[in-house]
Image 1 (cartoon, rainbow, N blue to C red):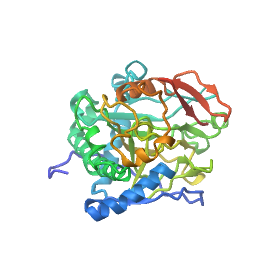
Image 2: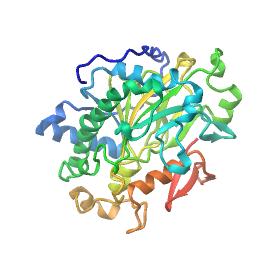
Image 3: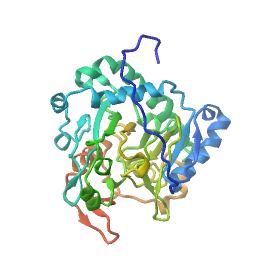
Image 4: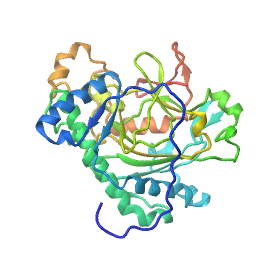
Length: 374
């Protein structure tokens, strides 16, 4: 972070950690500081490869971003310091544009049985000047831009190098398809919040009837549509992943760590060698109900003109696996990243879904079956 006087912001007070004994997923830990050496890169690449093949999630530590509490303070501004009317002004036209930039307001996504979501988002491209922002956020844009750059160059790029080495391809191969700050790349910073809507913890943020209708699910089980998602760990336990054994497991909070997962684009580019893991958001355990859950994310994706075909020519590992790769598109019919992003974004939470034999809700996007789990 450049040395300068930072604008004052109201401190965000995080929730206490969960008191319950929960079934937490056993996720590997990647030390990004050791991946800076040739020996460490090789060692950590094996851990990252196995994690993405078997679980689709891992933790990353020693990422080099030190004023983390300050970024959570900043992330809270678009929700606490922007009036409702101004939020409407900066709401994204998500279905029409296929873009999440701007506000995603409450009650936009349908969850189940007529119940809609209570998540509020504010999303910014790494190029923060691409669009206008609420008045309260404008003095903080230089900080957010520096944060986006750190996510992209100091977290995403090292992870992409690890995954490329795991695929036995030149380490810059995946990095070269994730260009920062150009019109070709739609990676973005995302702040989201679930805030108590009443003083009654039993109905926060939904009534008991709504919780029953959705089986306590706040965001259906899904895969992300990009390549890599970076979640800055926070204390409210609500994220669950679907384990290889078919069991929903909680993702535990590790202070100052990152939770990393693969998305559709990485799965497509590797022919299923790396898995886009299904995850969901559910009602927190009783000890954390009534507390605000604030999220800070970086959603990374390949450049918009990247064709989402398996990278067999570039990868010796994929060449060995060629007969076992999972093609989600017919050969020669894979879309570019921009088409996949727009289609997934426009459809999510707004399209008509059908039940599959395994009980999932399904939709067809660009010829691919996309599943949602409730």
